[in-house]
Amino acid sequence: MTERRSPGSGPPVGREPSPLSPEERSKMLRAAALRPINVAVLVIGMVMFVTLLAVAGTAWWLAPLTLATYASLTFLAARDPIFQRKVLGRESVPATSPTAVQGRDVSPERRAHRLPRGETRQKVEDALGVYRKVVAAIEDSDDVTRTVLDDAVPRLHAAADRLVDVARGREKAAEVTRDLSRDTDSSTGTARRENLRELEERIRAADAEISGTSQELLDLRAKVVKISLDSENPARTNDLNASLEALNARLEALSELVSPQQDGSGKG
Image (tube, rainbow, N blue to C red; front, side):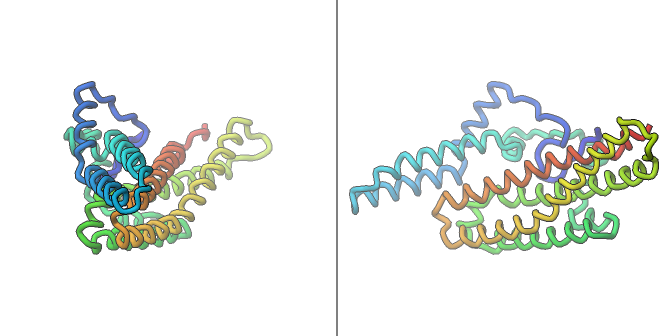
């Protein structure tokens, strides 16, 4: 299976990231613990705890909540491939990979424009329009919000590229499906009919994800606005980051699920 990678999108699809050595794990943990956004959450939370405790005397719950949030952010940052590349200077894809070079040089909008004309391309282009608005909402926000959302923009870029990967894989799978359908009749073997059925299921899964991505990006845009209005609330930032991670995970899984079918498996 061909390896693919987009800017800031983490390890290439179809290949597990190489494990960290004990020294690298320690370095990542220290870097994550001292990351400005994580330290800011810890400091803000403890300041609020001390202030509310002095005023109301009932804010004891805020300290463990702040510590738990700080620990979660540290843990997630230490395991984040994007942050690992920043700290360790890793590069997961060989420089000779033509697809990696293409991914770095071509925007998701230009890649989407190369898709066959039709409903899939239109849905992807609509989703990318929303994606650009989310990025603009972050970049046009105040300094505090941009600091809090430090990792959101590269994750958004990764999601946009993965969305196009899913659409490309979907279109190639649809092409194979059309070829198999022409060759499938009552005398066709069970294996080929099963391949056709699996392809159709994967295409339906890709269609559902592509259709839902625009709405999810609209939800992310609303979350960015809420964060800009309440940037000292770590729960809102955690919610946004969790949504982005879930979106990227689904798109990456679908990209891997659909794209291997481009080789025309089952046609023999």
